[in-house]
Each structure stands twice: as C-alpha cells, then as structure tokens.
Length: 269
Image (cartoon, rainbow, N blue to C red):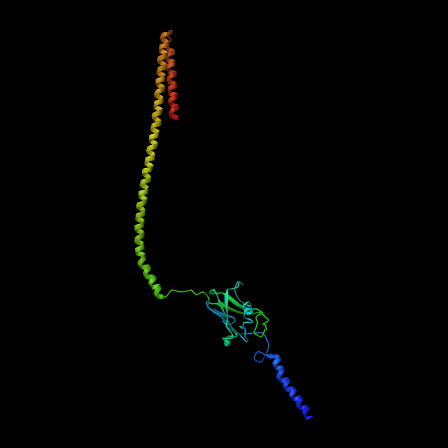
C-alpha cells in the first residue's frame, strides 16, 4: 500500500515536471507572438527630427536568422500621402549580440520631410524566433518638426538699415547720372530722326520740282507743236486761196483754247 502511494506521488511529480516543459517555452512563458514594447519616436510623437532613426523594441527575439528576412518584408514606413518611404532595416546578430535580439532599427534612406506625418507599419506576419506571428497590424505614428521662420537678429537688422542708408544717396546719384545720359541719348536720337525727316522732305520736294519741270517741258512742246501747225496753216493759205481774216482768228482762238485746256489738265494732274 505504501509502495502504491509512493508510485502515485512520483508519477505526479514527473507529470508536474514534464508538462510545463511541453506547454511552456521561451524563458518559461507560453508561446505567443511578438509584441511591440517600446518605440523611439513614441506613438503620437511630434516635432521629430527629419534625420531620426526609428528604434523598435519587442518582447521576443525577432532578429534570428530564421525570421530576419520574413520580418524585413513585414515592416514598412509610410508617409502622409500613403506612399512607401525607402528605408534600411538593421538587424543585430543574436549570436554575437544576444542583448539586441529584440531590437530593430529603421534608417530612412533620405531625410524625412518637415511638417509631415509618418507611420511605421508592422504587418500581421511579423514573426518571433518561436515561430509565432504578431497576428495584427501594428502602427507607430509620429509627426516631424515644423518649418521654422528664421527671423534676422537685431544686429543684422541694424547692418541692413545702415547699408540701405549708405546705398540710397549713391543710388540716387547714379540714377541722376543715368537719367542725364539717357536724356542726352534721346536728344541725339531726336536729332538723327530730325535729320532723317529733313532729308526725306528734301527728296520729296526735289521729286515735285522734277515733276513740275517735266510738266512745263510738255507744255512747251505742245506750244511748239501748235506754232508749227499755225505755220503750216499759213503756208497752206499762201498756196491756196486766201481765207478770210475771221476764219483765221477763229482757228487761232481754237488752238489757244486747246492749249489752255491742256495746261489746266496738266496742272490738275
């Protein structure tokens, strides 16, 4: 009977020792997925430097070689427009630096934009060394520092005032000199334009004189032609019977009238 009781006690002790080893793991804890314990910057942080590196601390080993590549593909940095930001993810070697087995560092390839919102996304398939995943989307949101308006110091303001006070008289003199030179240039241009106008007027007058001269020449030719006609008429009269004085006067008047009409036509043209 006593031996039977001893066997039962030993059996219970054995079960007590073995069962925890089966159901417990990872430093005596039940196997669960990794959880984010801490982040720098913290969730909801503001005025974060644009050159910051993002530090993530988990409660389990997440850098082991068996899960490193999986975890690399399950961490993203997203900007305020929903676009993925290029990053470098740093995993320590848990064999060389076991104290860093729960740490991950994210380094943006380029500085972040100011006055912007970012979030680190840890996807559900992110895994611990024990093979368990986080099972849900975890996000770390933060805002970068705002644009600052740099106001000039009082000394700079004084220097600017002094420089302005010195420059104004000099600039005023320069403007006066430039105005004088401009006025001289304009006068020269005006003189040149006047000379050009005078030359054009002279040319026009010369052309008019030539036209008038040509018209006078034409009139003289017509007069000469009329005289020749009269002379021929006289010769014909001598050969033929003499005409009456009245007829001759009428002929002369007709010729003179024709000459006057021709002169008026030329003058009107």
